[in-house]
Amino acid sequence: MDASAGAYARATALAPDNARAYIELGAMLPEAEDAQGAIVLFREGLRRDSAYSRGWYGLARMIDATGTGAEALEVCNTFLDLWPHRDQRYREVRQRILALQGD
Image (cartoon, rainbow, N blue to C red):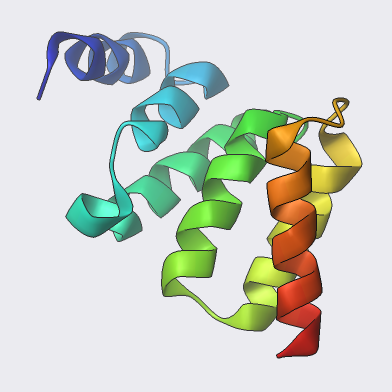
């Protein structure tokens, strides 16, 4: 575990209501390494702050890689509802929604 991940892991232990710590720690887990672990961390963060759009983005990516299309579609739509920017991340998720709807 690198220093950043260690700091977020300590933050979840010291401040268990800190949504950001869970979400940032989840974002550090590549899907090939521990997608299920990242999903747990994103869900824990979102349980603490359901409006944390970065958490929905990370959860959408991990579920899309490992879960069902219906669940990925639901999480992607939630992200788009919360994400205030019309940037590359928004376009990426929008394209994925269109692909999931076509499946």
